[in-house]
Image 1 (cartoon, one colour):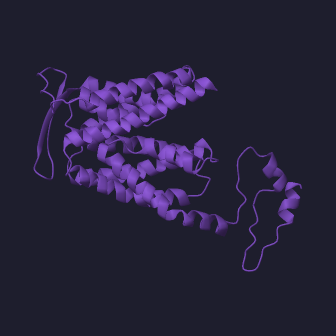
Image 2: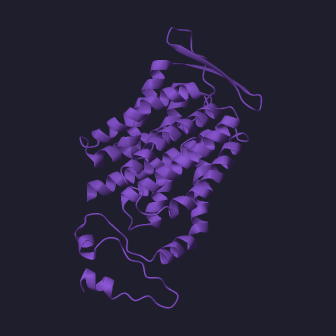
Image 3: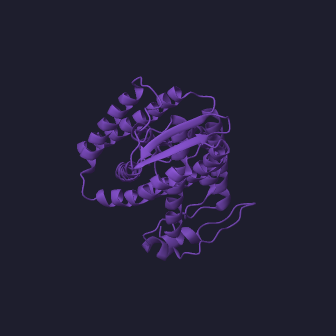
Length: 322
C-alpha cells in the first residue's frame, strides 16, 4: 500500500479526531527526517502511562548525581537506551542533556543556599571545559573508538580503585607561590573550608575534563569531581557543589546548541516527566550531602565512576568484536 493510500484509508472511530499531517505523504517518504504520524491523543496517553516511572527515574538519577557532583547523565543515557531501544541516539542524548541541565540548575540553587559553590573557581573550570569538549568532539574522528573505549575504561577502573583507597582528607595546604589561588568558604552550617590550588592546574583540569568527557561520551561529571579533589585539593563537599555548577553551565550550553539545531522535534513529554523528578531529586541530593561525610561521598563517587569504566569496556569489546 502506498503512503498516500495509507493516509487516505484512515477513518477515525467514534470519539476520535482525525489528525492531518502538514507534510505530504510522498514528500514524507522522500524526506530524510523522521516524522512520526501518530494521533496526539494516543501519543500522550502512552507517555502519560509511563509518567510515574519517568518521574521516579529522574528523581533517583538526579539525587545520586547531585550528591556526588557528577550530574547523572552517565546513568540516564543507558537507562533511556534500555527503555527506548528503537529511539535514535540523537533523541536520547538531547533528552538526557536537557534533563541534566534542569537537574544541575536545581542542584546549584540548593548548593548556593548551602553556600558551598566556589563560583570563581567554577567559572575557571567551565571556561576551559567548554572548548575542551569541542576539541574532544573533533578528536573522535582521529582515534579508533573501540581501542579508546577499552583502554580508557580500564584507566577509569584504576581511578575507581584509587578512590576506594583510604586517604587523609583534605590534602595538605599548598605552599605559597606566585601561581597559588587561596579560597576560604564558610557554608550555611558554619563549617569553614580552606584550600589552595594553582590556577593553571585548574585550567588544565577543566580542559582535560572537557576533552575526555567528549571523547568518551560520558559527560564531565565523573571525571571532573575526582580531578578537582585529587589535583586541586578541594574539600569533597565543595568539589561536588562546584562540579554541579560547572556541569550546569556545560549542559546548558549543549542544550541551547541542540535547540538551535532543531533537535527538539520529538515532543517534550518525556523531558517534562523526567525533569519533574530530576528537579526534586537534585534538591534531595544536595540536602543529603549535608548529612553525609566526605568519605561516604567518595565511596559513592567511586561506584559511579566504576559504572562508567565498565560501560566503556563493554562498549570497546562490542566495537572490536563487530
